[in-house]
Every structure is written in structure tokens, then in C-alpha cells.
Length: 83
Image (cartoon, rainbow, N blue to C red; front, side, top):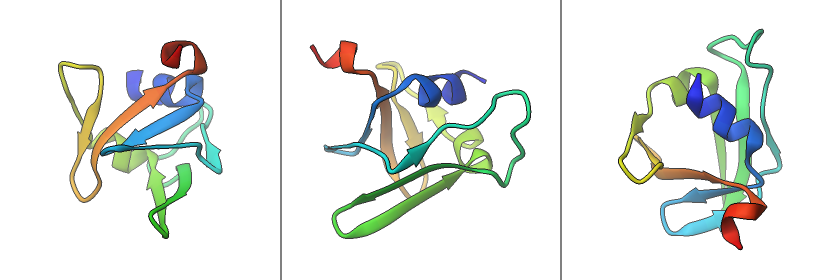
């Protein structure tokens, strides 16, 4: 799954207009279940917790980001892509 590969390779996550470093992210692509938590992060005083099932529902966008209902814009970034 491309979105899971991008998540596993990322150092930062863009959520709408904010860049965050997740507390925990990634999961085995081979053994992941729909209810496995793949991303945990805090921003704006809120906790963001996403499961593999949540990411499977994300809509890919032309700029490489994703739209996720209830969350908004997501983009997975590596350190190299920020320089």
C-alpha cells in the first residue's frame, strides 16, 4: 500500500497547515490489520490517532498529499524533502 510505505519512510507529517513529528508511526506492511494504530501525534493540544483502516480511506491528491475525512490534508515528509 503506497500510503503505508510513505508513512513508514516519513520523518514528519503535514496535517493541514502544520508540520508535526509523530510520537509513533509505522507498521509492518505485510502483517498490518485494519485496526492497527499506524500514527500517533499531538498537535494543537489534540491527539491524532489513525489506524490502517483510516489511512485506507484517504483520498490521494495530485500534489502527493491525501485527504482524510475528519482530519483534512495529510502529507508524509522525509528530512530530505524538506531541504
